[in-house]
Amino acid sequence: MKNLITLCLLVLTTVQLSYAQSTDVMSAYNKLTEWNTEKNVESLAKAKDFIDDAIRKLTDKGMLAEPNKLAAKAFNYRGDIYTALAQQKEKPELAVGASSIAFDAYNKAMEMDDKGKLKSKITRGLAMLSGLIYQDGNTAYQAGDFATSFDLFSKVMQIDEMNQKSGNATAVDTLAILATAYSAEKSGQADKALPLYEKLIDLNYSDPGIFFSMAKIHRAAGDDEKANEVLAQGREKFPESKAIIIEEVNYLLSQGKQSEAIGKMEKAIELDDSNASLHFALGTAYDSTGDTDKAVASYSKALELDPDYFDALYNLAAVYYNQAAEKTREMNEVDFNDTANYDRLKGESNDLFNKALPFFERALTASPNELNTLTALKEIHANLGDFKKSTEYKTKIEELTK
Image 1 (spheres, rainbow, N blue to C red):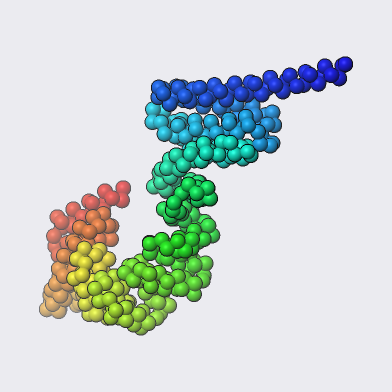
Image 2: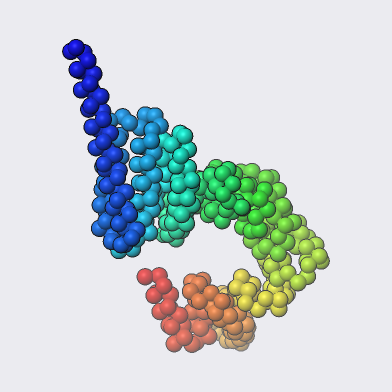
């Protein structure tokens, strides 16, 4: 009889614990219902406290060791409550990290719901949550917190993969994959970025940047052959991509293969003479060999096709600027009494500075806060004797670099 009494007490204790936890869960649900009908953030804050207490008790009593109805329900409500916290604006402090907590709660609810009775509710909750997590990921990305944005965008990918498996999505969320890949790359996780870029290529995603990014990763790993293979694949798919073209040319130039770089660009131009990026790339190749006349011709052609092409404007201006700077150097080495030679070089220098000036001004219009352009304009005006204008550019540079 004594053993029977002990057993009864044990059963009673377990029932009491389950009842207490169930009460917390229902209290959380009731407060969530109040929020949904009245939009009183205090109700939502209380719902949060109730559900957190319920989860804490379930954890302390070891009730998460195996699937059970109460735990599944508790975590599903927690997902709903934290999704609402992430959406509300009245108390921003309650929204911090809420979307990630909701994501983890829904996943735990799925784990506890071994019979699948809450599957449709959990799936709907995750679908609603996906956009909120993406917003949080974008905020972290814009703030330069790429490790956090990678974590958040990865969650969006996981939700999309779940939707794919359950048939609730009609197309793969390629934007989430791209955002995750960029975040991985920028957070120093190239090994995680590379397969994501490859997946995008397999999905025929239309963005030349993924080929450029993959090539950079391979190049950094010392695999130039793979990098060049990826670039060639990108060039075939996106023949007008400036980033891919310039990367190819820059690699050849870095290897001292100027003739090959020039030949590559000339052949490409034969096939597509209206591509401004190709003419610009050819100009950079000629520039590297010191053939300034052909470089000027190529940059000018690029600008004829695209008058606001910043890189072509800057490089063309730089050709004239560097020639002017060389004349100035020669002028400063002239014998003090050789005024005729000094004046000749001064005139030639000024002519070249005046040639550079309009292109730098157009470049500044295309990119108003570009420091190299502002510095060049400051120096040109100083050399031409317009110290007022030179000071204006100097002041702007100081404002931008404070």
